Length: 305
Image 1 (cartoon, rainbow, N blue to C red):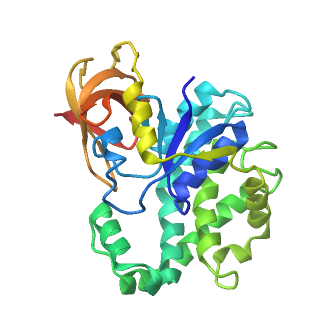
Image 2: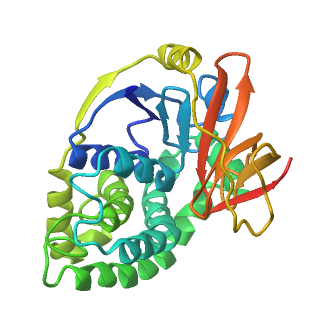
């Protein structure tokens, strides 16, 4: 099997989610650092426009979004499972809440405290990514409102930890990784005396258990080397159709796949395979040749190119 390569940067919360998942699985992986903001010239040949962090690469297969990344990690490394008690549906439901509600609120609280420390280039980049203007003053003024909302959501997590060391039982599940990384971002960027976490010792203890999982074994790799890996690899996935695709999409059709929320940059290619969970498109790039780009269906829009 080709090496797992993660394109990320150290302070990315979503990358921390994947790094910690690698730790649970005991995976050895290659670490490629990418810029925090655009441009990302050594990532675009792989993704065709998708700009969010992280991106996982295995040969010439490129996995976008942590939902898609961790699904593939679970398939290749089934033990220990992300669903130790078999509650796959519940784990995904908690994950969806954590990443659609808890994440934005938590990151807003952290940014509100960082305020004037946020570089202007970062604010401009994230404003373009989200589709709304961002300023240090606006972010700081929103913090008290977001703290109110965050405390309400922290009570959900606190109640889930009432009887067990992890959210869904005695072992960490996908739900734990999804809920942990927004809180990790707060812990990294908020002073202890101003952090909403200080009110919830059970959550803090859970976070310590999660952090102890570690990141597996990471070995640095240069971005140029990762591009060479993709160029040398040969994608071999057979074409397949989703018989129940509501849009009647078929293998061979050219489409664009676009995040439905922030970072709405489309990737254009030819459908190779699709299902209710995933769509895989083939694209050609002059730098790396043929690559297959994998996206989850949840959270993405597939439309004719």
